[in-house]
Image 1 (tube, rainbow, N blue to C red):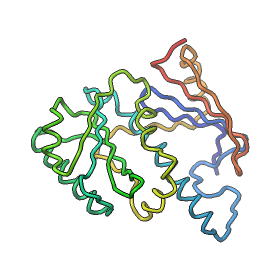
Image 2 (tube, rainbow, N blue to C red):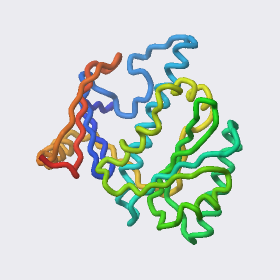
Image 3 (tube, one colour):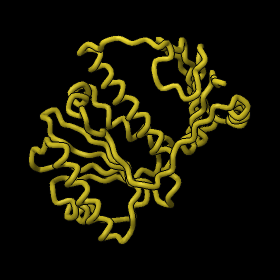
Image 4 (cartoon, rainbow, N blue to C red):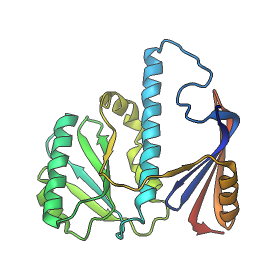
Length: 243
């Protein structure tokens, strides 16, 4: 017998997101619940790629928040650029892989990280990475290990929503559409193994219990329409923010 839900809670570390749907959603449903099928135009395909990129950003944001307090270190935000105008994703990803291997060898640890592929307006690739268990290492040493160009690293220790803080650097609107075209058939982000995962809760009773427990904390609310699910009410709680 099919199961349906009209509320969903996603817990990512200390960030709780609650979705309330005007129309119920079937558990496990991943396609258009109306069963609608159309031949996609080029505009539809571009819109789909933008939506895919938007979903990827949400996934990255939640993965970051699920891991910021999990590894005993303040997270580090690292930007890696190429001195040369590297535009080939496979080549760039290979260089990042070798960098990560050299860095792990130097530190004698397995790193926990999320890396997002970004493009400058000219098409050059660079990386934004969040490392969750990276100990102190000098900028000059990281640059020496990277070997490919400029690096910048910051400790993120006074931010209560690291996922949102980091992903705002990953959403440059002036080249977003161009980015979706360049990422066809390629991943927009990749991660280390063994990261903590966001928790999804569909049981109404558990969600109600969570809402009661979250009442001392500030809530951010918004509403937006969906073609298939009707009006969606979104609430976010941050347990590092109180009234």
